[in-house]
Length: 239
Image (cartoon, rainbow, N blue to C red; front, side, top):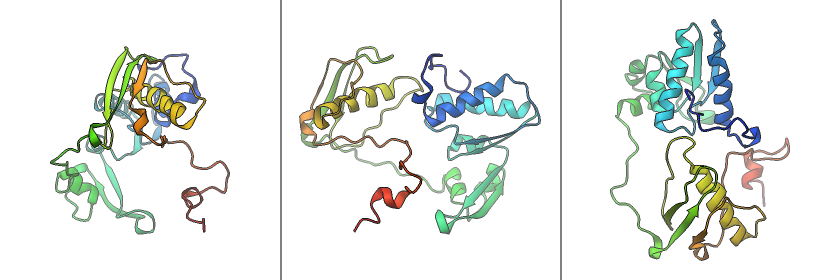
């Protein structure tokens, strides 16, 4: 519960866990160990977490600190950075334009460093602007998922406007992936692309006739051989 995994069943296949879920399971195993003097290193433990579950995770990390351990996280989450005792900001940009320590100190000291882009966002000097006008459905076309009952979904029905940017959100374990991936994506793939995968239980999906193709951009490794890299995957070397 403290690491935002109270929705998982003990029989859940480990192969279906996300990277973040696997990491938080390992973290949960450390909570009751009582170990002290340990250096814990975590790579983006908050990834995929709802704000409510993120607050629980931060409390857990601070508990590990309070009993006598050192906790270091790689994080982009604003709450995690602001709760940290000490921050190391690396940049200023990516790739060959990075690799430098821009600032280090408390969150307040990071915010007071003019060269820190992270500090500017933390202080509110820079922000991600939200659009003043929201886009409407293209030609009023929509996809409608009717009676989705996979896993913990309670016979839900929802509409998604086509030609828009739609966010499916909610607490961890609420049913987002079951609704979007296991139901909508797999049903659309089966009907449009001829996939053999079976979608989660549902009554019907309306509006698929408006789509030509469906693609799931997931977080699985991009290559199947040791020689695969971003260039080969994106076709940069293709004549």
